[in-house]
Image (tube, rainbow, N blue to C red; front, side, top):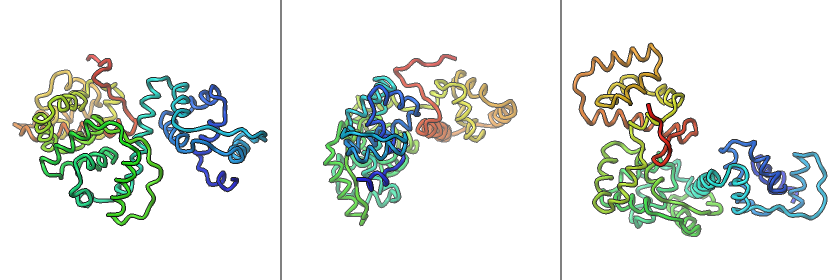
Length: 339
């Protein structure tokens, strides 16, 4: 047992300590962590489930320099992690965090695909049912899944997108079987680990489409309109657009604009509303604002496809920063900012 305690990671040891504490005390400790740290800890609590008292004793001694006596047993698992997050961050935020924990843990079953080229992944998935392909893509990183989806045959791509958008909770065994099968085909030798709940739905589809090129995005949504209008409408309602930059706080707009070339920005602003233009200009330094205005005034007629691609580049920057937790994007059912 003591050998196990010495092999635990720092995050696992924190999880053991919290599992060993009174719930109220554990919640107080959890509140001191950031949400991203709490996610990691909650994931370890779910995986550890129960820990032998000897291991818990050793960890507590290491961190608290105390001698813990008695034969109590630490408790973990999904229910305990959820209860702890609720007590620390509130029920609504806890629900979001648990969804992210479940998605991250499920995605680990397919981590071996991270280093595989999109064309090779398409070969691995050749002949699979749309539902199977959807399961895999929904749990890959969106920026990695997007070129795979874009490379599928048009009809198959639409079916897969519909499956991702309407997917509910996947059976853990299904995740394990699919991952093991693909690993076997790819000649991978690493273990899949324990499978957990895998959640699909509209949001994974939105994140994949947001990273696709403009032509693929347009074609896919048009095809979804034909076979599942309700799904297509919901996807559109959740997708970011260039105009959504007005929903960001000033500091977030400034962070987004720092990574965008003024030439691209000038093209993206073509035909935009005054509200969008004002937000962009007001969040640039005086020098960059002058450069942007010079760029904009020197532009002649610009192809609509160029404008769309420039706007897509801004949207991708927003999505990347949001995924990193660097900025916050207001959603459709939240209060919007008025400028």
